[in-house]
Each structure stands twice: as C-alpha cells, then as structure tokens.
Image 1 (cartoon, helix red, strand yellow):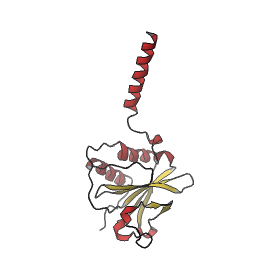
Image 2 (cartoon, helix red, strand yellow):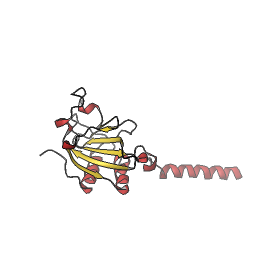
Image 3 (cartoon, helix red, strand yellow):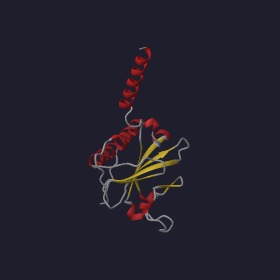
Image 4 (cartoon, one colour):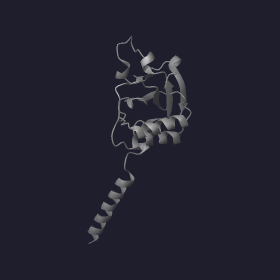
Length: 171
C-alpha cells in the first residue's frame, strides 16, 4: 500500500512536469542558453550583394555567420539592435513556442534579417537568418530548424517592428 501511494505520486509528478515543461525552456535551448546577448541585424536583400569567395558558393547555401565571422558587410547593414533579456525570451517564444500546424515556404530566399548570438568574449557563435517573404531560414550548425507559418511570421514581423526595426524590403 505504501509503495502504491509513492508510485502514484511519482506518476503524477512526471505527468505534471511533462505538461508544465512542454517545450524546451530558453535556459536549455542552444544557442539561447549559451549567449551573452543577441543582436538583430537588418540588411539589403542578400540576393543583391552577397558573393562569398568570388561566387564560389550561392548565398542561400550557407549561413550569414561563417567560421565565426560575419559575412554582412558594413555598407550593406541597415540596422543593428541589441536585445534585452526580456526580448531574448520573446524571440525564443516566437521562434520555438508558436505552434504551426502546417509549414509554409516559397521558392525564393531573399533574407534581410539575422539574429546573431554572441558569447562572453563578444564573438558571434551562432545565427538564425530569416526571409519574411518566403518563410525561409538558415541556421548555423546546432541550432534547431525553425518551421514557419503565417502566424509565426506575423508575430516575428510585429516583434521586429516593436524593437525598432524599420527595414523590411527594398524601396
């Protein structure tokens, strides 16, 4: 009888934790868990300027962060905004906790925004680049792939506007 009560309590706690802890917490999710801060960068569409190593690669085949180096040139950068801890959590919730029933993506890829993760030495170590037009993204190695849908893109665009990003397309 005593063990039965302990067993039932243990089962209850496991079930309770699985409902409360549904989805990973920001403190457990790479790269959010490892960063000192996150910077949002907006830039001209990569299709207009990006030619790494003399066009040896197409811009859509690699991340904006290559071998610890940012491949966005200053002349192409339009805005840079450093996120607060609260904004980091908002971004995490949008990217990984907003449920998409079906994913949507178009064939184009003209990204204009990246989320760059910096360590304590202020060196970039991970990035998530997004194209709000085609619902596509490129993540550096180890970053969980993001599934986009209308709802998530709308939330992400609203978030970017709320932090002061104004550049969304070429004029």
